[in-house]
Length: 393
Image (cartoon, rainbow, N blue to C red):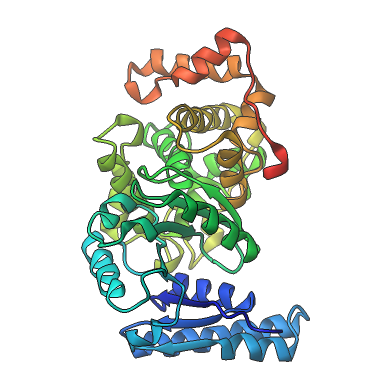
């Protein structure tokens, strides 16, 4: 494969940074992967070699392509090796001060025309850009883990980002065989915002003693989700999921729609983090203890409640211009593997029906948590449907 002249820099040799470096290398770029920890760089190299061997065994990569990809990535602790890079993507700890320091440092090293991008999943791009000398060249590129396998990339312009850069970023991601969607710089962007009820409402149901985690998972898988919310929280890590929920809740000025669950906090405090700790909502050292015979057909009320809340969140995001209808649905199907786009699902189920579920919940609980989106109300009144460009999904 002929190498392109464009050099890609990646900051952070953890799972995400290493994955992004692999994606760029697979697409013919020379990549400079920088980390201050040499052991992280060594681990990154070993992990890629292991992945490459598996892909060769499965006949997805040739030996020659494997060697080319691995040799394309320069791993170093020397930041000055980023000088020739035209795109630099940061993928380090979710700490605003740390990320800001990184980009200030980069500004003094790379060319003034180089694009600076952050893989942040929750921090304000505008806040980071506000500390830079040239914020117009800064943009958010939120990949999903594992980056080589997940198609979605959220492209998030800061308030200061040059609009032309957004177009370039979308084109660059497509050239990397990714599916880019544009999101407004608001807490959670698309996926981490719209997906909150998948976890939050499931936890609320269990908090009330209305169903077990196993029953909730069975109900959601019965309507097409690959994993139930409790299985997924255990996979993600309850500490990680709780931190994101707390961050979104605080960023939205404590809107009750995003309130974290006490159950999840207690699990984090107990060290029951999920698969990585051996115990979460399920026991992973003796999974047989969790096996139950559950009649999912009797649990439709669970999926009705959670899906209504998800649709409501997607409608609210559309109403507030967080993203287009097509990008919202694409983000949820390609980023977190939902069985259908939520707005398409609303069209199919009937917006009136979704609105009725929300109204019943709000009346029953008397909580603002269940307030229906103004957009849903307007569309129900006008008997309208969400307009979706399905060719973009």
